[in-house]
Length: 139
Image (tube, rainbow, N blue to C red; front, side, top):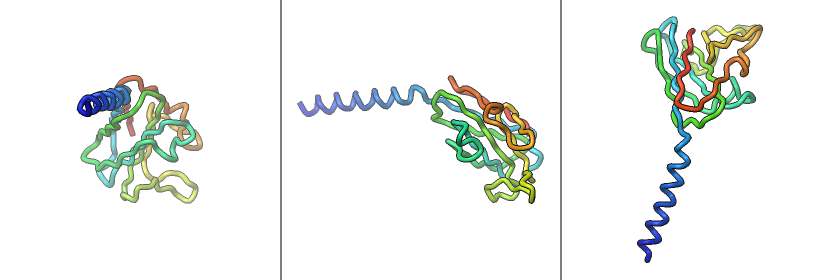
C-alpha cells in the first residue's frame, strides 16, 4: 500500500513539474557590430516597464571574442520583454558616463530602440515571447 501511495505521489509531482515547464522558452540575443574585444558585454532581459534599465529579470555577462556574441536566456515564460546591453570595456560591470550623464560606453536595446535626449523607452524596445525567440541587436 505504501508503494502505491509513493507511486501516485511521484506521478503527481512529475505531472506538476512538467506542466510548469511547458511554458518554458528561450530568448536568444544575437549581438553584431561590436567595435572591439576589450572588456565584456552586460546583457539584461527585462519583464516589465517599471524595472526596465534598472533591474533585469535575468542577466548575463559575456566575454567578447570577435565582432559578434550570442546570449541565451533559458526558462523564460511567455510574455512581454525587452533587452538592454552595454559594452563594458573596463569590466567594472557598470555603464560609465561623463559628467553630464552621457554614456561613454556603447549601449543598445532590443528593436535597436534609441532614446531621444535620454535612454530608450520600454515601448520602443519591448517584444512578445510566445515561442522560442531571437532578438538581433546591432551596435
